[in-house]
Image (cartoon, rainbow, N blue to C red; front, side, top):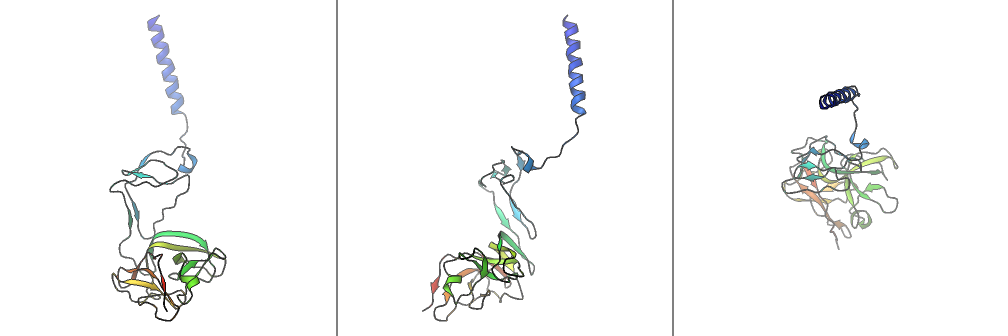
Length: 219
């Protein structure tokens, strides 16, 4: 009886193995999985042209270099980092961006602000406090041909635009300009103009964009 039971068990196991082997492979994206698999992601390198976009189905959570599948946050432990690219070529950028709607015709490299009136990105003018003072700032990195077109704005990072940026001083502050949509290396001096640092020169051509929340109005 014991021998017969052993033979029967082996027969059943063989049948199960054959059935599993016959199942076709299925390719699943993370978006299709309720519980994402753990994968090794040591760090995030933001190289020029690389894009890392995440939604609730594919957010990264770095904990000691491992993607835990957490869908709501990006915790980072010791020695984890987000690294910006090295030196940029002309017309390139690297950093954190936001998609939105343009309120003006916008070109790559334009300094823009987010308008609370129409929720659109519009050109900064340091002569007008409403457009350069208590507002969010960005650099246009995907232009718009008309009011209402989609636009991509750099909110933190590095950008280079040789034909519209002035020669920058390495390590020195850069300011919102009294020329609409431009940046400048000297503080505005006209009465009622806004003095606001929007970043620093990392090379003579490259801007590290990290706008200050503080500003003063020239008297």
